[in-house]
Length: 380
Image 1 (cartoon, rainbow, N blue to C red):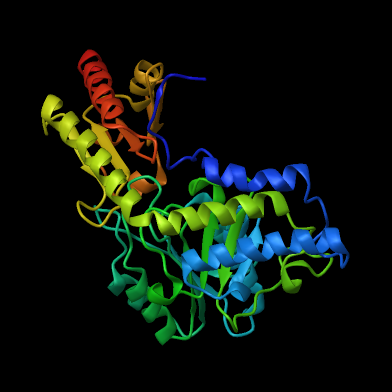
Image 2: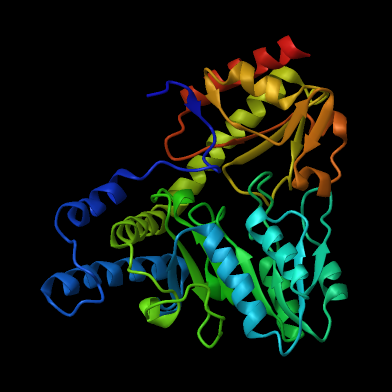
């Protein structure tokens, strides 16, 4: 196993040992089909029902409002396409933001090709959507607004409740991609006042290949998967009992340990941030995202006139992180998020995202500070 310090928890998380333990009975015994009425099927259905209850406990919703999917990408596709086709007779206008994940932006681009009108809202320098911009963009035929809860690159948390209320005031549904926020900050669908919310299992210490779409009771979506009547007729396909069980256990752990984990994430993130700024100075390091309203584990740093890919190559034997830009043959390719935030190229080209997790230790952070600061000095 790699000895590199893992600071890329926003990309994916390891499976929590307790979640893995919960999955073992499914691997070695509970192999029944939950749709079957015999003993083996009923045992499997009981596991699915428990997982659904654990997810609903974390999100603060009813069990009948939880649809299991294959992950965050499918959840986003289902929410946006499902709403678009279900409500197209009322209108064909959809609003999203410039900093969404490709699983939202590319869906909207595809819908535009099908005749829908798409409005993409800008963000300010902190990566925040201005509610006034949404209010100005809403029209009588707007049927859906999709704005992510927290950005995966810079961690900025959006004013979802205020945005959702604006959408509802004009009769539009509101969807939020909460893949990055679930398990890191409180995510309660009633408090957020959203109609649709996406969850990615592998961001919350569950396996890859499993996710959830919350659908508020009374909301109709056009079917995304056709076949038999699984998930109360909303998503066809034999239930993935193994990974549903893992996601359910992971959600219960996230709910119970949320306050403790939030504090730990923030402590490790702030230790890394202050350590690098102390060693390199503010003239060499710039923090991206909202200074306060950002995920407690996320640190997006831009290093002045440093190529991010070269920096990652230099630190990769010791530290694992992600780049926000790529430089090839003199060309700089910035992420859509950094472009939308209008981060100057000399800074944006050197953007690296560090994200802390449950397994991050103070010792690891101190080592990472030394490794990264030394690499930056060598490349400057």
